[in-house]
Image 1 (cartoon, rainbow over the protein chains, first blue to last red):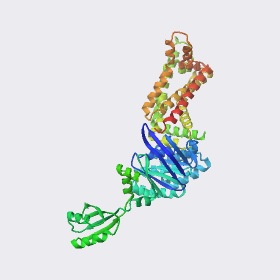
Image 2 (cartoon, rainbow over the protein chains, first blue to last red):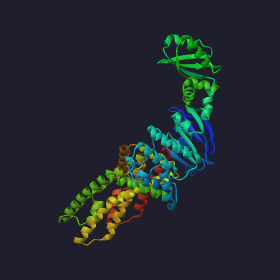
Image 3 (cartoon, helix red, strand yellow):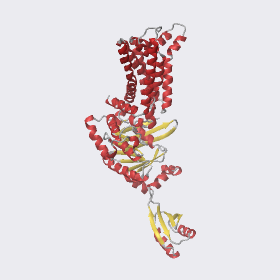
Image 4 (cartoon, rainbow over the protein chains, first blue to last red):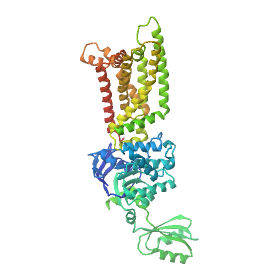
Length: 315
Length: 247
């Protein structure tokens, strides 16, 4: 469980995190989403007590960060951005070192290490020197280190950045599994990751929370603005553009080429029907017609692009 | 305590898995061997002042100090600076470890390494034992002096390493600090009047301390000076780590 109230961090005189308040109940997987420089890492560093907030309170697992930072750290597993590791150590040496730091009694260390090695699929590289591992393995070693003491809360800063698609899928599977028995806060700017892994999303921009909700909920904020993709055969682009724009309920049309037209509609009525009639009238066979779904990408772009972010705040 | 030991052990792994450790060890032994030879050659001269060889080795030459002034910054430069540069400091300081435990573990590792540097010089004593009588008291006191001066110097070096993420800058800061500490008696000699200040500086003369140790005199005032100044710098290192960790 994570409770954050009025959290603010000011560097010199620019606020990196600006009066942020949120609550993550036990067992939730929360995605921290935002462009680079939005304040995600700064917020996470404050949650892990690595940075001291300028103002505000942080409670993790009912421990106030100001009262007992060491006790708070006992309850979190943290994977910093870029996964810093000691390159000269072997994987199991490193995990043993982490177990020592986390005060795991010696008689339990062996089984704890076996457990995280299994979970993070590190069996094959157990005795390898960390410096020789690929990025994907390093990421998993970092995760294994963060899990070694069975923390209640996991804080992961961009856990899939720099990985190839296969590795991303494998880490995401691991994250989904971890989400079953941990409270997880992860930051990312990969939107599909949020959709795949998170129960809830916080979109953060310029140090402020600009949206908070489930991935579905945020998508439906975009509803009322439906889009339709249609592909005609043999339609002259200029004529088709004009004709489509004149249909009722269509707000705008763009033509990316190859006979494809993207329509933005007001979401009322069924413009598909009039598109069909238009096609018949002009003898433009329809090769494809599909309703576009507002993606989280759209929400993200809208909320984190300046003028739109301002209007969202007002709303 | 266990966590301090874990940090110490990791640091030693780091020392001995880098070529730097072996370079320092080799260079140190070559040079010390050379000095030992020179000392013996000098003492074999019938005109020379009578002196125990190890006494001259520890307290008699500027070489002893030159080595320490160069070697200690090399030993301590990476302690915290490296962790800061690679970001592992973030892992260390977000696990349930206090800054003091981090500093202590790192410092002790440096001290262990420093002791390992000196260990082979015990062979000189074995060699001398074959050819002459040895009074072991002054030899042991000399080694105690080496450890105590090392304690003080490594403390300064550890502090310097907390100030930056650049090895070279950490080493230079440590070097400047050590030279300043070492140069105290030069300042003392420049002062004319017998002031309390001059007397205080007189007690900080490390060269004189080491001469005493090498003669077998373990003066508690010297011991207190080395230990307390060493601890002061370790305290400063801890504070510096607390203040500068996030940046």
